Image (cartoon, rainbow, N blue to C red; front, side):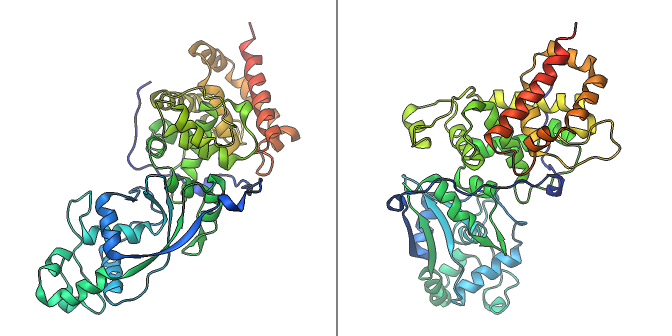
Length: 404
């Protein structure tokens, strides 16, 4: 099975069944929560951008990337002394800021004051609403070297930006809950958007890679639009239950998935000291796998097998015996991808030999009330729901593997 990826994965997020997202279940010690508002000068922002201590994730874009007109007009707003909205960041112990809200604005400021890291070119102002005649076509360096621009340069560099900073030591669950309350363009950040902003590293690169896998796109049998990162979260559910022992799951799916991303960022080494910072309450699940290459292989193997076994109805409540496809069910995706990835080649071949009978039996199972509850939007994240669906579907597979 050859690994292939696509650079343009497209799957409509309306294809996914909705699930209830649980709130924080545990109370927290207010003394451990450290949040402050800071006013930071543009001069200090430039210094941080030069240092790399403001971390800008290039692939975390809720909306389309701003065009040059919108970027230029943001700089024009600064030149006109128009206040910008609040920026939200999480600080780590190294003093770096992970940007959760305000990424487009800070990326624009970086490209203007310094360079765009991709094109290696500075932002050139254009299509300004009020200042085009004087500043159109100019870059920051050109303005700095022009004696007639010193006043506006001082205005830019003395601009004060407002930041809400969540300091290190604040519990991760609290941190994510705070950012969940942020509204951007009238929409609250999704849990995966928050994870993606907070836990940059191996995990975000892995999810991006898996989302582009042709095996995944074939299994999903649909184009993917990951604007709200539901597709990344779907894949992360497989990854989390693959690397962690499922019996250690404690009903908080947000924490389970977040912990998975934080642990993957430590791969391939699992330093005990660093792990203790992830699992501060001592509730670390058993880590079964810690190879990114292994995760990639098993994921694509699972996608290939799901397509072979379930056809266009993989991970859906509908089956190959139905005419109409139902939406992708997240619990079925997580469960079946893990079950199928764990079968040997001989076992999967035997299951395929009984494909017709197996899929008929599977269709009957999906009519069972207890099975439906275990994959429903309210019960699928409960411990009982997780354990029940794995037990039922693993036993179904075992039944056909035991046929002589």
